[in-house]
Image (cartoon, rainbow, N blue to C red; front, side, top):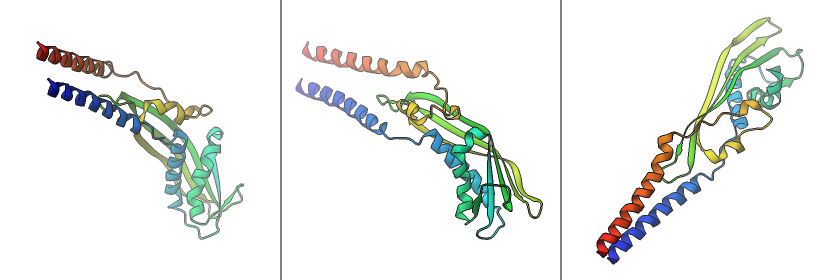
Length: 208
């Protein structure tokens, strides 16, 4: 009898420990969607900077479109050119010109579920930035590179963190959280109820 009670105590203590571990894991702070867009913009800027033929201290102008994203993508796109010791110019008198036109900026959430049987709810996140890129040499009158490029990022984040990773003033940083799958939400309560029912049954069976 004492052995059964000890086993049941270990069972429920273990369930509590698992829940605690998952709760601790869910406390981390994932990167904001804005920060991810900036990282993706730097990656796309790299694809232009890799084609840059100029020497040190060459002047480069960088134009970002549409205007409502320029304020948070400008520095990210310019960063790879600064790494090549270019001088960023604010006008079109610079020899080299970069055009970065964002065509797709999208955040998608999917697959709401629990992280383990008794863990906190998580969901998958996918962030996509697509842009039309152009690098020109104005002195030579040549187009060095032009075309559409896309960069993406995906991970799994706690459902409770969605609000903190979005930016209220930037619509492109927000996504729609889908409803949790019916069976996913149903399984855990059934498992808990079942475990309790089995424990009670075994307890009274041993007593009888």
